Image (tube, rainbow, N blue to C red):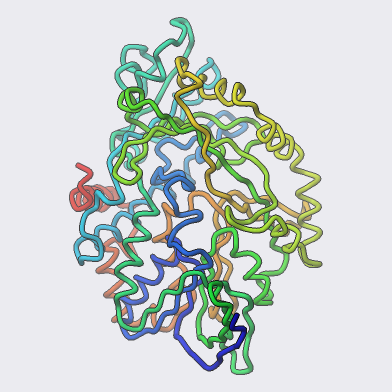
Length: 498
């Protein structure tokens, strides 16, 4: 085995992790400045095999149409819709960029990664039905959601979701909302398409089977990255001006190695997932929607149950789940020591605090781990009463690492969103967290570019290019209904969602 270390190679930008975030940032930066040199390192031997992969990702194209956890009911009974509006706009921005990729030849066909699938919320019980009705009334006041339909009528619901209504008691109080313009996004396919094009561009190098061992600040303020080729064992050191850590669950340990003050106090809480995947083609053909319900008390948002039409490798699939679980791994193909290695002096207090205050979540995860096949079938039958045990197989989904951060009142707080952690000088940035993640990758990367490339981002050339890639850039689709309608109409046409 060759254990030699080669030094002195350089790159303008280093991207760690070959997922949707690195792919998006890499393409954007090359569009903004074609002469940039970019090195991309992925620890596995394939692209998008962790969080971005189709079976490891919700694939919903999170637009807040159906996810009830984005619209909590407040103590006064009203429905908070700010987060839903924000996420809906972010997804519209993502669709703008994807349309640009189609129009500029990065991707040949939108069908390779995005398809139209109605988004629905479905609930039962008088209290939940009342909540869903209030939610629809609140959301439809905003133009993003004005086409959302609501029904308690069994005949209408049977048209929308025959499997969900089949075998259900006639007197059961149920209701659903329906958004026709929902999507299913295969982020694995999208990521692979972007990297296929990106690695053909001059100045771009993609290295699979390469593990980033260390990140160190150099005397001149730049960064030195130590990388090992896992196939041959050879190591090399690379100097760069900017690092993006888009390594999913592996981002926290790498961020900690950088030693930047902004990384202090962050911890990670890993949550694994599983899907039940339908094997009966007749059943699969009868369902065409993403049907989301309400999360169990104490469960993380990534565990919101849904009966989900997906397109994976050009084949229609039907999934239910995800069932949550606990593993000390930070990546699906990580180490059982990941969690323990992430514990540092500066994050012990937030970790212990979350451990004390999140007992409901801990109990929930333990109960999920201990579920029998009969338990899982029972959960499925709440959404599909006539589901049969022999027609579904259990498959492992992705591994998520929820953010734990310092909190002045509690000591530590568990966050279920995504957070970009950036050094004061903008020379290194890492994405932590999970949902809505991939669906909002484009606005997240735009914000990163504005923060980390401040001088260039405000230049006339970069501003013009950003406006070309994202025509609504600098404007608000939340406030401008005409702009939102025109943008949605244009991207729906380009992405063949009409």
